[in-house]
Length: 437
Image 1 (tube, one colour):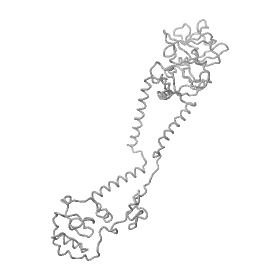
Image 2 (cartoon, helix red, strand yellow):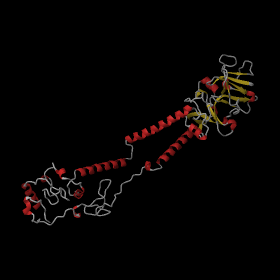
Image 3 (cartoon, rainbow, N blue to C red):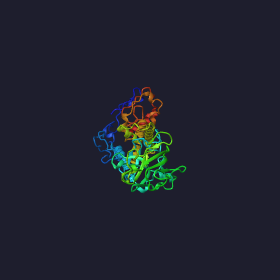
Image 4 (cartoon, rainbow, N blue to C red):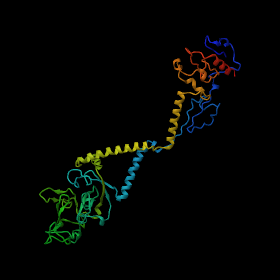
């Protein structure tokens, strides 16, 4: 093989000399190492020893190494629906364990328990969800007992009952227990009224029409009147003669009254004909906890949301927006903290490191024997790019060992040397001595 030199160089007399050793081939397949399959752990795959063909061809370009795939539940398309379903089931089971009732939650469909026409947080309003806990009869506290002990729920004395009117299973009524009456033949007893001021006494709590002085909690008949009941301080008149059946509760909605001159008249469920005395067997449960506003969605879908206060819709919208923002905040917070599969995180870090290494190799390619086969893929360099670089004598020789201008730093197509000054003769002789070696 004849070595070409530039025209007019001092080495023209040596142009016809043949190299002493066997001819060298540039760019041949034997000068390139076999491509080894990629391994995620950085180890060499079996069968990828130097000199052996890589799977998928001599150069291994057709072979696509298998990447390790770690199964994560959140990668499944069913992950979010299953998580939502699991949360709902867990919530329902927890509510059932707490209330001992099924269903444990009921929607308030009317404004009979509201204190006015607006939504008051902490009170029972139309569209609220109320938990109905099943409790024994002895635990239920009436308004008249709460008046003496100070026990109150949802803005008034006593417990709020959910019961089936007249024992007919259907939509329950949610009203407050006012007083418990015990049937005594044709007469009635009200033990909870004992000790309260009555009749004509100042601040009297009740009066009985059958008694001369209006007092007496036992053996009552005629009309029983309860004074200053509820947030409107209404008088509730109960016709004892019209009651039938066995012992039970007098119930009334906080917002059920007849507007008029003070004191106004309250309408009990028994006086309004909603139900008879609420017997213990009719009671579904006692209101123990609530979730405001969310029941309004059910009423809207059923077309009975006319009594839902406007404030409830506003509060519901703000609550939904706050929940969405909270979920997004938690999502990005957990991502910032790096909550993820550690194996995938390690794999991503290795990929980033390999990409950075490849970028560095492209910017500053090395002339090692293992990476020599990649050098022909470098971008074409113009003479202007070579200006200012170190002289060729300071670089390593090309595949043929020449350090002059005609040799490439790593084999392949030689770079043009147009306009470059030839290296000194001393350097050329040094390169020739290296070549002869």
